[in-house]
Image (cartoon, rainbow, N blue to C red; front, side):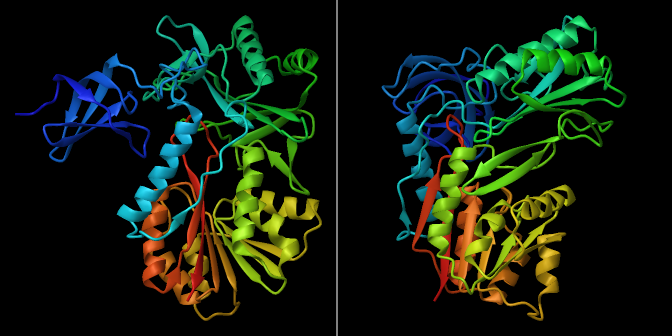
Length: 453
């Protein structure tokens, strides 16, 4: 008999990698939305599978000592934060445990040292970029805010978010009022009618520069001169305003046509001694201060030498390679996204870096082109997407036999899988360093260095 639809009383024992809590029912694991370890909850089983059930916590019968009051009034229905009701030191503890579990369970590593996770000084106000969505509500009014948890097509009006800055909250409220008062229609993701789609705010934490990027359906922005005049008057901290247009149906805040309404069309951020120019559609680490810590520990683990020739795979806008270039002989970056490669070349020139070059294309194609070993690399840096490395890419990297292999990962499970392959090929992994880039979420970053034995 299936448990689906039943209301059950459960004891929560753990947290899972994807942010869900863990309980057990009749010998099966139950993954729950809501609940913290140490709590007794009443939950509804919403899906039953042969090996596990999924449920939603409907009522907390006994609260955990780890539970705190979430600071944000939107926490219960916002999709941004998962663990704001969990003490920060416990968030770090569970993230470290999940890294160790993935290494042991998926990678077969039981002797790798998992160093103490690097937390942040302040778990709020840390994001340098936020995307806010326009939406047509059920009463046909316009709202501007964030996604409800688990729903791509539901947006709530944001009052205050604690992840970016106070300035960001004020800009959201101002833009909502401007769009409403000028009767500019919001885009409807179901009918694809309307105009306003996204508001994206980017900030240079070290430079105090602010970008406002308005992403709309196709067509010139109405009252754009008035928008610029009034917005910059209200917020002199804004250094550039961008208008991106897109006719694509996908719900992504990236434009096909870009117009600079005010300022230079970019902001800049500093990491260590380098400056990075960030445009509306550029990728850049979302937590500037913690990115410095991440890269700092990565370079300490890599131990670069002046004779090293470094291949930087999935290099994005070239941040890692540019920061590393003055410590090594040469860096080659490989990245699929053309705009990212353009940004990487621009940032290399901005910092006067001449011993770095960038190749635009698939990593697997670049690795395939190097089969004959035209260029020897003593060190590889890998910073792949969440899916990790393709098996063919792993195979080719092993064939290249680099002495040093630095792997930066945003997904401990795919890191563990790939690490197992490198281990079987004769590479040692003495330690990994978890880094918390995104407090109050289940996301974990980690760095590991492999040695060829």
